[in-house]
Length: 587
Ligand code: ADP
Image 1 (cartoon, rainbow, N blue to C red):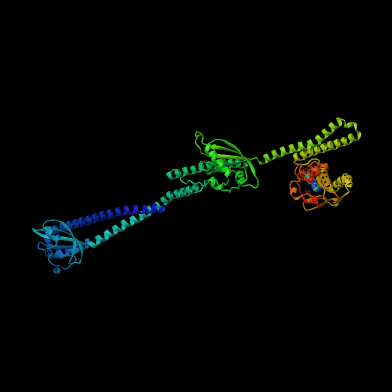
Image 2: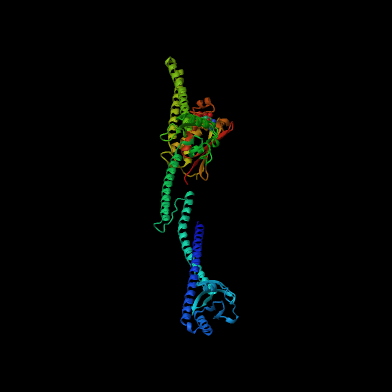
């Protein structure tokens, strides 16, 4: 831009100075030539007046003297020629060797009465001369007075004029060019800056501004407008970005998955829940929904939403991309512009993962039917024996006592069942246990063993406590941890025919590791996974006979989880079982 501007300035200057130089040289040349001629004519006029003034003393000697004297004074060549062309005197040459001058144009014209000026090559001097000649009437005789000056002096003058004009042009062109350079710099610099700013804006950098140097020309007005525009752009983009961030954080903080698709099936917007759920890649905004999502169920929902252009609600189970089957509640709604509600612009789909809710609902209903079933058995038994007693068995004392014993056992089973259900629901609702204190697990275990000792003795089973004295104290609710040990040790006694139940504890880096090991019947491998479920029993009859409720291990599991612990089972049928529990302790 700057180069172009300077080049055009140079061209304009060259053009103008060329034209003006040409005309001024031409004009000055003409003017000086004229002046020169007039000057010669004037001088010749004066000289002829002198000659006329001295007409009485005119002779060859006088002429000789005259041409020498005035030739020196005027620094010109003076020649006097008679009417026949003979040279009477010449200030620069010997007249005797000079040829007849009748053929010279200036002489011819002078004799014809014309005062004239001629320019031509002088054969006698051998240089270009300018001649003025006029006829002077001396006593009726015409003589020609000729003045001549070598043209070289005129040429010198012309050269000088050209030199001055060209120098003037060069100096003024230089000054103009310098000014043009400064001016172009002033014009192009802000334009360059504006171009740079525009480029930065197009790259998304809106914070740049241009410093305005001079206040009121068009460039600074443009710069001002540019700065204002870029300020407004910054504000607008900032506001848009803020809105986007807000929308993004709202979308991503939603528990539900959201996706918006335009009518050409390109993804307009997606939140992290949706992306993570369907294991989609990160940069999929703008991409075709069908090329990035691979899920037939979703396809049919999008198709239907596009087709119906209406609100759709559905509950679908998905299994394609997940490890486990998930149940999703799907809502889809059409996207339309305000005022153009009939125009289909796309679809927004929101899903809610209801797998857990449905699972809990299922568990609750299973639990209710299990509890009902568990309650029904002892109650039926109690009712049956009560009816039999009422029907007459009460009179047979021996039978009556037997029946009352059974009713007592069933009532106790009922009581235990209700107690277990209550403690299970209490543990489940807690996030943290209450009445916590630092206790020594060794004390708890020996207390529990003391209570269960008679039960073990009845089956001839040995209870072995293997707990070191330096076990770190454990912060817990004593009743809760006691219940955990009771359930495990009691199970060990219940499901062991002979041998022992060993309770051992040891300290590891993070945990207190508890092992309750028996030498009992063991648990088949296929049942081990479900053993901690509510009411799950390997052998229902055996469990009932042993007075079990089917909730013992479930209670143990929930107590362990309440203390952020872990538990698992190692068991082999016929060899025995070991329940391993890890409880994190405070260091
Ligand atoms: P229950 O009241 O029936 O004992 P639990 O929840 O305590 O219920 O145990 C669930 C089932 O796990 C029991 O019915 C039993 O079949 C099996 N079980 C529990 N502990 C042992 C064990 N130590 N040895 C063998 N089987 C066991």
